[in-house]
Image 1: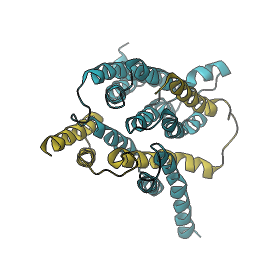
Image 2: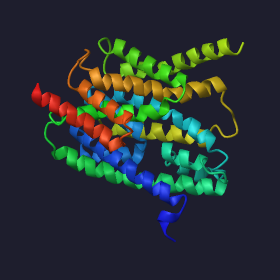
Image 3: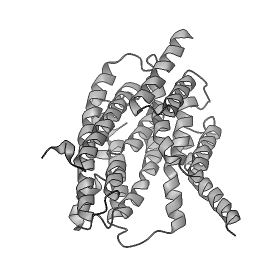
Length: 228
Length: 100
């Protein structure tokens, strides 16, 4: 059977390739701009395997922050996976070891593709197809980017440091569907703006997480007014 | 970034992924907490964009990265793909630095 005609494999492979290109930019930034060894860069993609957290950690390192300061924002970004796991509870209704293995492949793409299927069997297939495809291409891309990044010249001359805000903006835009998310994003940015001159690297991003509380609070007040 | 830090990040990320699939099985989290959790990425990306654009060593630094972010925003507005977005940011930033 031609995998490119399969309703699950085709989008999974397409997603994987797109994420692989994203992986190249991660590799370039980690080894080029944050100056991490190629082995460390590849280990992050293999074992952490969640792009947003990896980008966040590496951006703190590139700003001159300590590894400890890099962990907070990265782990906070990972909190969304708790919600992903809960939403897949009915799809991946299997044994404990099976779930523990599946957990490593629980990412944005596999969750989205699995929850989009009506049938749990097809949902399980979509989960593994997307998870494994993204895993292979993300790590391949990271390796290529890490090799490339370590031989490139000064990252600032090439404008590579500007890839960070561009990547974060590209990740943010699809999240801005509701008004609460927009309030959360702007609040997070304002908190960070105030704290950058006052605190060590990593702290402004961590504190920016409070923007989620502000977004939820403002949203609740707005809904309280419109439906008394 | 030490191997210890990589290990902590890997184990921490894995535990977060596994917790929803395993530890919270059957239980429900309050809707308000669920809503706050769903808004966390937006808040963090807002802060990350700010810090990676104007963040310096305990100072706000206005430099060519701002032009790069503007280029990325324009590319996103024109519905460009991820690669075009990050490349336009890098190219515009490099050009502004070369001219300045």
